[in-house]
Image (tube, rainbow, N blue to C red; front, top):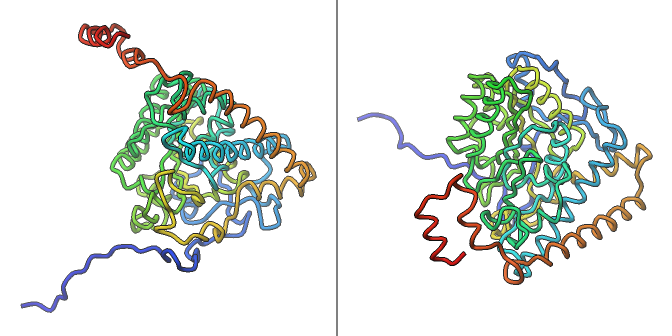
Length: 410
């Protein structure tokens, strides 16, 4: 006999459930400008605290303050504003299109626009992103044609991927956007491998890996950190912590480290947390991490603290697992409103100009949508040719595929 009590299993629970009052008291938010900016070549051991704080530039009054501020001109900030507004409008139109049966599936970026739009501006031509399905802002901020994005969503006759991918799983080598995979975390190891290959070739291009908070529970995430740390790969390891996986809150995947960024510390990787709804802070941290990679100083892990305001996808009903008003209570606000307030303070924006920009962007998105739909939608109009199934896989088509294509009459 012994005096030990029966063991019990600990299962993390979210602070509130549907019907409760939203509670973000666990999100410790430092004052804007309070977190120091270390030298790019700082020793990871000397900046461990950055994995437990949140780097912020914009304060509550809309002012840019602190050591991470002052990196973007007025023109660059206005461009960032328009990119975020374009992504949000694009989202809204494609969500409606899905509800109308014009496409089978869609995933919004609502509330997360600053992350991908600002990050893209910190990269150079030739750098490669290995994104998840919520970084379309990387394409919009790089000037990728919106019509092509929509044609991919519709899987029509002008679909650049010829119907081979699910909607929203874009691909563009020219724009540094590696083909999205529906399998979770696979691209984290691929990004590290691509970065290692760039270093082996003595190239100058760097890679950026992307993952959601829930997917960090996958083994590929940890394998990527081992290789990135061991070989000092020129890669930025991005974690988008938007508080929720498809129905599970972040506490399930986070583990006991307290933050997702803290996971990098055990691998000797410099790890930072940044306000993902602060365009200026995202850009500043991305620029810092990119410079570190280009100077051959190895990887950086960045956790973007944000909130998924919309559903996980058009197949999801978030009201089943979180309070309906939770997004309104998110303490870091809306990225577009925050940047708008900053631009107004700087005297380069106004409420009138904002409304005008909204109208102009809506017109351009609707025009692109009409053009894309002229090439077909899911259930109407042109579709990719069945012949495309047989193309683009082998340099020389093997006999058995040639016979199948002939039997199909394509």
